[in-house]
Length: 236
Ligand SMILES: *Cc1c(COP(=O)(O)O)cnc(C)c1O
Image: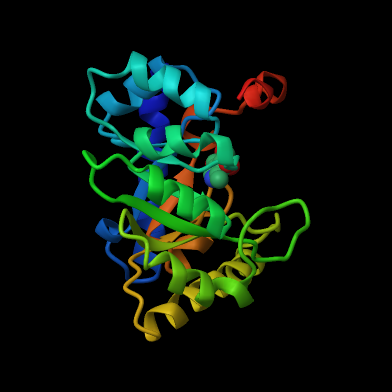
């Protein structure tokens, strides 16, 4: 477990170095620690080393950990696939949802966000490479989605999120991530006030920062590899 502190230090150094290389301020890139499949003790450990934002993919698993960590003040980000029968719980237990992938989900999160809580921060998930296996808006539909979602009073549209198709090498990664950056810039030119570009994971955080990422979502390089067969997807 003491490794988490070292891993966090290394990831923060990578972020600082990547920012330096493109003359950005480290303050403009938030590190989201992706804790899916990892126990609440790992989160507690990361928090004691200065980490406040955590990303989770599986609702029931996240709720269990939130309960175990209710003595801490953490920011919770939902980043996994969303089934519509889970929106009520997601809208009341998270500060952010990065994986809004269709209008119906946005509408439900809006309608179900408790009045006692501030607006729910959301990102639209973009299917950058038109992959059948991935959810998300295609680039061509983004503007009309943004137009409709900004009308919803209980949501705050903050930006865009993507999980690009796997590719290796800085320049190939950069090229793909820049397509999300371009969509982000275009929406802002149309008058949307987006401030969040949620992209970059353990393998491509340098390229993501070069492409303007403001939030990198790092799991493996903080908490270690995930066991493929302990993936609790089926219990969600
Ligand atoms: C698991 C996951 C991550 C973290 O990926 P790593 O490669 O482990 O850093 C980031 N974003 C999303 C949406 C994920 O599901």
